[in-house]
Amino acid sequence: MTAADTDESEANDRLFADATRRIASGQMEVAPLIHDAIRLQAARRQAQSAELYKSWIALNADHPVLHAVYFNYAAVLTEAGDLAGAAVTLREAIRQKPDFYPPYVNLGVAFERLGHSNRAVREWMGLVEQLSAVNGDAIIHKAMALKQIGRVLETLERDRQAEDILMQCLDVDPEQTEVVEHLISLRQRQCKWPVVPEVGRVGRQKMLSEIAPLSLACYADDPMFQLATAVAFNKKVAPIPARPKPARARRLACTRPAGCGSATCRPICAPTPLALR
Image (cartoon, rainbow, N blue to C red; front, side, top):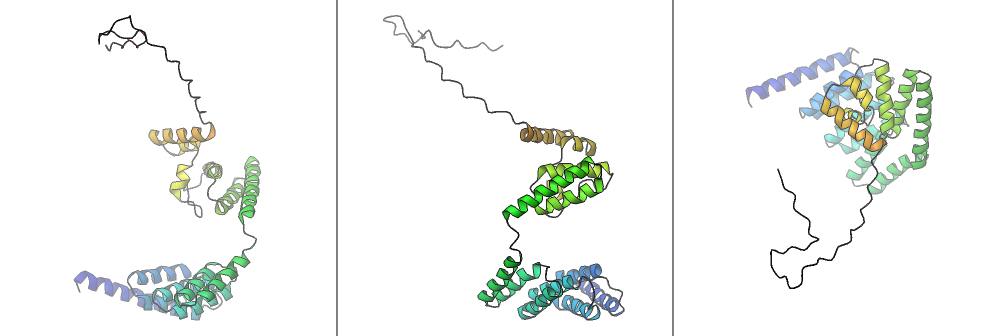
């Protein structure tokens, strides 16, 4: 073991000891708990990571996001190979909050890896049946309704409410360029930072790729970026109609003087070469 490895090991030991102390004293919030547990996982100390979750759960039985901690605890157990323990923990996460859906998926995966494929299918089907109202038409119509609400609120200059509605709309359907355009414009009007945020499944890079030209002019001074955005915007909003194919020109019959077989004798229909100057 190198000196660097020794230092890292000692740092992880101190991290675990400090996290254990804060849990025992009731000073550990959920976010730092998850942060420390993930660091221990990255250091391949799954047992210590799981111990942090286990200790915190024991002392926070009435916490409002206990279901999320159970879910992360199950992920550590799965990584450590304790699939049966993960299944029990995921069951508890579901019991704590039945409308928290990720545990249903992971529970099915745990049963599948345990060799119980039929049980896994039943777990997944249970989730599908709970979400029976979610289908293509429902998504389309919900997105349409949210867009209309956002449009009216924006017109009424109720910018904060319009922004919240448009964020919900993107969460339902992330492929909505016009919603991204209006959302960024609303954030600019409110002087919010960052102007271009991540929204659910829509990353910042995608948001920037769909920004409107006028909003971009206020946001960045990169001329090539502005040009590319303007070109893409105009292709989408006012595409150039396809040119009709020209009718095939009639081919004139080439005529030569009778008896002319010289290679230098050119047909009279041949185009005259242009002189380059």
